[in-house]
Image (tube, rainbow, N blue to C red; front, side, top):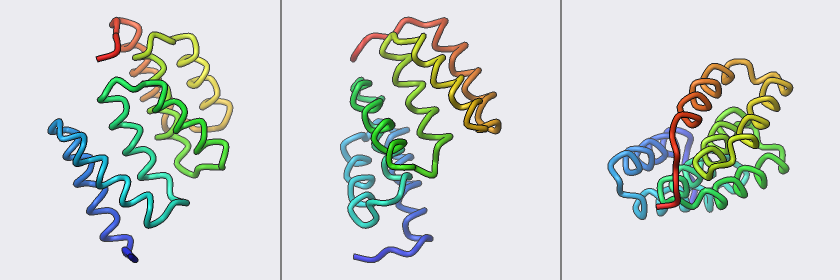
Length: 130
């Protein structure tokens, strides 16, 4: 099945709205379908990472980010931000801080303020797997 960029964008938005409303299995279907129609795109992986984070599957989200980044993912900012969140929620704040440092080294300046705010919030909370 071929989807044009407008259709892909609409489906991705639906997936993120489903996540927001706690409908994670439905969101996973959307993001998995998008990934199958264009496996080279990073957006569906970011959506699937969010699903994993919501479910408390932090290590899975980190693995997805690592895999995509090794493959040269173009959405480096979002991939790293979700990785940072997954690590922080897994109680691995030092590694989350390393992700932030790597973002700065990689020149992802537009995402540094978000990374700093996330680290601040994550360091104030204790998370456990759901």
